[in-house]
Length: 454
Ligand code: ADP
Image 1 (cartoon, rainbow, N blue to C red):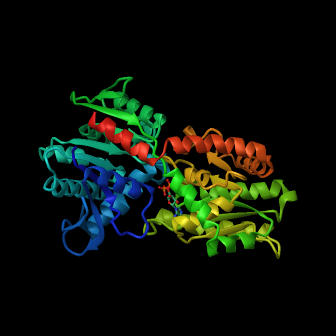
Image 2: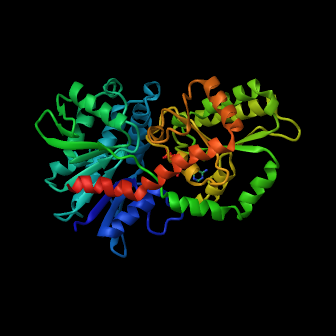
Image 3: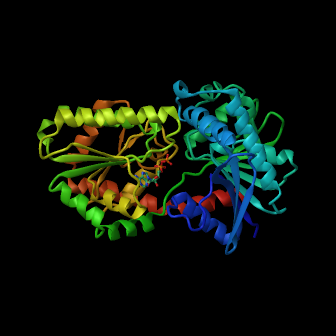
């Protein structure tokens, strides 16, 4: 069995406090075949990038690299998060393109490749994650690395005309051909990439997933929707009801219905639109005033990026505005919380909620939608209101699917979920839950790695 090498910007070290679903999945994969996890150390240093730190834990090694303040700023805050992130989430209006940050991104990818190449063994299988590292395989090939290399894009792949707005897009997206396998979240993302290769890449895309770049190099692409450990989350959620913070939330609600939203504070999540849709709901359905509380958890993220600071101010204004208009002395319609919670507590909160509001304007997958479903009590499951523009919508047709730009439509869906008979709630939930248990995170990584090794 070949050794697995995982490469991602952030590395979840073996004893890290908070390990997300992906971290757990990668650790399990590494444990199965033995392996190496390579990425940024999380440290910014004065002086040069490139110092390596190594740690062994059982049959898994961790190798991480420091970045200088300037490299980090250009590669991560700059090109990855102010150029690629908005571009890949269909937000040309927010794309901030600069040659110096693009250059920093290329430089850091080249350095990652150089340091990683020195750690590789001949028959290692390499799995690279996400938009921070698109050119990595090309740089590795330049150094003579012939290993099998796969890439998984966690975020959406937008239409080709959007991609083409990026200066030098042919070079960046053309470099994807250096991978042996490229994985997308959904068939739609795959379709859009295939169109790009045909329209702008001068290459060919065949129905069976094979692709040929303009220079003749053959590679493959496929859809591999990411998922969660549904059984683990269900166990956490049912255990969480005894936790003090979950009980306190329950007591604070009294007989009110809870609607919950859980998102990183990010403009792709459609939070201002969701707040406005909830206000529209309050305007149009005064008879439910006092009967529903909307709790939005939104931990601050990428706070060094100006667009995120502006979003934070906007949401603070909106929450105050809605509560000012609609609250009563004994009822606050919107509870807006910027804190982080442990996954255990979070699953308990999901389970208390009769409505899950997941309405991103664009999302590669959206794991919160899946976590919400996995956390429900089968005897009284909550209803998921889900954006059509989340990758998860492709597999979650029994949710109430909404267009997040249509505030009245979202308000209607909230009212519909509030009034939905228990029988219908159960039917919808069972269908969602069955599919989630079949397509869990273990199946996701196995399918990707099988395809990469094939
Ligand atoms: P993204 O990867 O864009 O942030 P996802 O919905 O796919 O979006 O994944 C978000 C992850 O972050 C989920 O696993 C979710 O449980 C976690 N998360 C979101 N908000 C919080 C919070 N307040 N506390 C703890 N975890 C959170």
